[in-house]
Length: 298
Image (cartoon, rainbow, N blue to C red; front, top):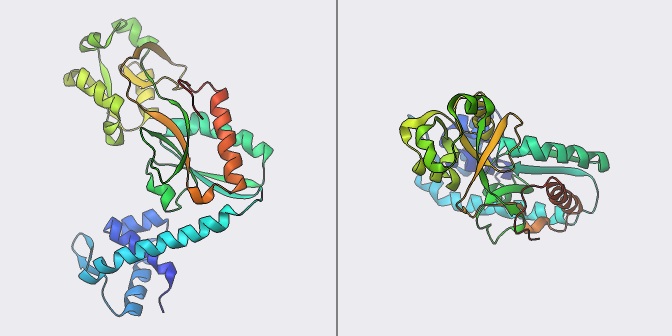
């Protein structure tokens, strides 16, 4: 009989393609993944992977059983969520994901500090990630997401609409002057984005509106972008609620990108007392912080 604890290792290698990447995903070492895969294959009496030059590739058998493995994992997670959903204790652990380091550090961290003072029995882990499958596979209990249309499979609460402003440091403005509109940016130095932020509608618009030669620096996260801006390197657009006392708001970026901040949980956890208490606490905290609420809806 196979050990069902081997299944997540099989899935991770199938998805990642290498032992190292699978080990990083599962927070274990390379040898553990190697041992688990070998053990699983021996118990099944067949090869699930071909060992190729650049990693691991599913065999025909491996491809056939992958769907069953994924369904089994989902069923196990559903079992855990259902059991956890019946938990009325104000103790235990909550795993929450946030889409950016700036949101996690500026808003989530102080919220957790206040919450823990009222509920010291509840422990909270934070992961910066923007993958919605975190919730469906129980990699997270609660997700803060900037999204246009939340999946119907999740329970959501809209916090606010997200708007954007153009920012610069006073140092930059003293040296190069203040742009009055997006049209003026052709005469200014710009800080751009790369990585995951290339798909963000606001940054897509910024890239389309601004000459590519004007970009003097790019970064893949908001904290680095704002740090570059605060050094007087160039101007950048950031969410209107972004916290950096070294930056000056210049003007609002007018297009409506239809981006909203949501608090999302898996429906199997809606009866969990600690999940409900924290999600309510987080929602109320963001309201009190004037998290740029527009057309606020519960």
